[in-house]
Length: 380
Image (cartoon, rainbow, N blue to C red; front, side, top):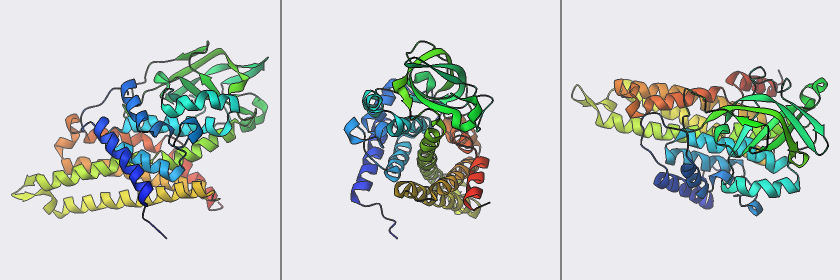
């Protein structure tokens, strides 16, 4: 079993890290505003908006593991978990769905802009009353000539206020449950699409989220993703990539967080000694390192399983998402404890890392949903 990354793989990762550190890095501090187009373009110039898209459309053509490595490096280098999350949501929840399910015409029309970052994508699946139950979507779509007419409201759509394209899911046959859901790529500028203002959120400030309303929106049939009634399969395919790869942004956050905490423990003196000389502090830092490395190994394995097409890939992804998200929250709490009162202040940025970490146990399926997936993998 080889744990080394190899030359080309680590060179690519390091290039992303160096570029993000040079062009996008901001020191820890108070909450940020949602990403600007300038920062998005800087991220796109590093190739992260098209990492796993086909090379013929301008993408990187990477598998899940290399995609995750680059997202981890981008998050660590930029120091902006919100922006890294926004890029990941664009790439994994949306671009993957278009890549794998759009017809040739739509792929040619959409993928070059998505890969280059000229188009920002948002995933419009979640609804107020549906949550994790994708078989009960109130948003409907009916075929009318060569268009589908969409009506309904989506909530918690990451990137929506800044998006040019919405990957949306709607019920085309209410009697079929999850087999009656269909997926669409919806250009933002179509009549009948309305996007709300950015929601006030606990964290991930760099990633705007908003509500999306479809009111008699006529979506050309060429923008349907997959066959009618295959929306749940489209969604699960994109979620396989999102659950495996997106938590890598938290590995990057935790790596920087631990580096800052160790540096603080070396420099800060109490009772005439460096803070790190006290076992209560040094052991806490060791536990943070242990959580980080354990989560990293599980995530790399999950991405490898996805690349190899293993039957247990879904279970591996669920296990890794649990480990990464719980480590991110626990490490952020420990970092605040190491920094003490300074960690509670906005200027240090440590409390922001905690706020960014909390939603990791909710998005892409809550921790409880992930445990159900693992239980199913165990045959329960």
